[in-house]
Image (cartoon, rainbow, N blue to C red; front, side, top):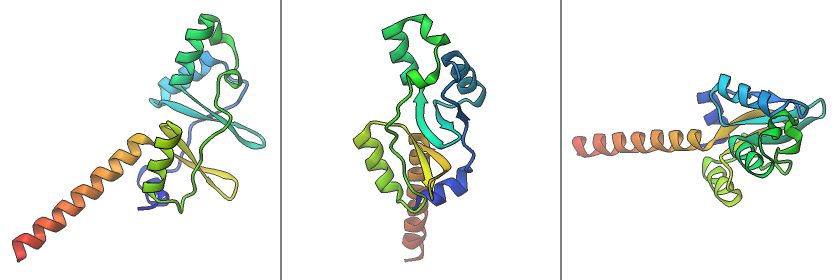
Length: 142
């Protein structure tokens, strides 16, 4: 299965914020959208990604004052991305190697979606269910 298939099933909308958004504003948006990470964009495109983990680490290092600081100070700027034509297997490997749970999907230099580890697990579960149904049908017909 390809990343494009995952996006077709889940949708391609991506919650984004700007680098100037405060960490408190980020937390509000994460809560409103019930998500664990947001893509950080500027007029030039993707500039980073910021997750709940980034906030926890920053709070530990800097204390509560970090909530008033811009997300640009805590975001990850070397963002692992994938392409819609990539396989879910290659994305799984990318997530494992880079120890990330959210990967923006880029197509022709533009943000085309985001895939989370939850999306990968859901896709795997659907594939396993389909295989099981096919095997059961094969056995009962045989």
